[in-house]
Amino acid sequence: MKRYNDFGDFLKGVFPFKVQKISINAGFTCPNRDGTKGWGGCTYCNNQTFSPEYCRTEKSVSQQLEEGVAFFSRKYPEMRYLAYFQAYTNTYGELEILKQKYEEALAFPGVVGLIIGTRPDCMPDNLLQYLTERSRDVFILVEYGVETTSDVTLERINRGHSWEEARNAIVRTASNGIYTGAHIILGLPGESREEILHHADVLSKLPLTTLKLHQLQLIRQTRMGKEYEEYPEHFTLFTADDYVELVIDFLERLNPSIVVERFVSQSPKELLIAPDWGLKNHEFTAKVNRRLQERDTSQGKSEL
Ligand code: SF4
Image (cartoon, rainbow, N blue to C red):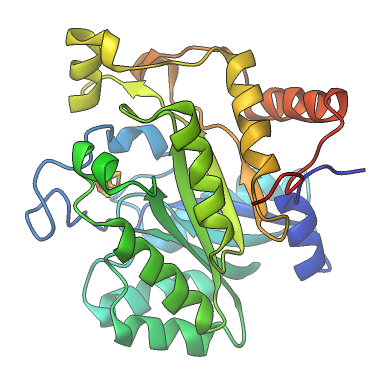
């Protein structure tokens, strides 16, 4: 028995075949770095940390898909693909350019949908309208970087948007019938354990399809990394086992209709300051499953 609403099962319910995400770096920039929304970016962000090896900006969307497909299709020839526009802010640009990139991905053989990672303050009405129309024929999931539901923390990490903007973007997108995801970070500086768990109560009331949880990672060449080196007392870093317990407490308070896509992120070792758990994503997931069983609990068990 699955004790949480798992992303793999969600995909199985949507597609009658196996699907694999392929990360794309479409060369978009970020409005929180170029002054449009803010300068300098979020304090924890070093964009290298979420660019897989095959993502190079000088390569077109089709070239990147070709390399991704070649990698997976050797082992699974029947596999289909979701183009995952992951790096930076993938709705930040002229509408025509955005459409061109998305359509290039959708036209690639074997691609059956898009996952578009973006900021909550970057979803203009004309783009939302295009995505709404497109989502009637193809799978589209818009994934918003929400990170926290606390405005105090959003300010502290220089996100450049408010919680209300995140809430609005989620409601607007979902009410247009588009699959809507959120990404949050557990353990941002200044947040107590109870404040972290309260995010689950708040997110549970939103029309979210998917949620990704990430542990706070301190990354080299970031402002937060520097802050950690200067003031380590401002940070509470979890051990892997403590983080498992936190994740389970969080799941217990999370609406069981929300699909949970992942619990951790893995930054390249050479960029990571802390915490270094040495666990792969699937190893961490196995730990969560084991503890869910030991604690005989499940997602939504103590939803408020
Ligand atoms: S985390 Fe996203 S929004 Fe923040 S600076 Fe990095 S790319 Fe921009």
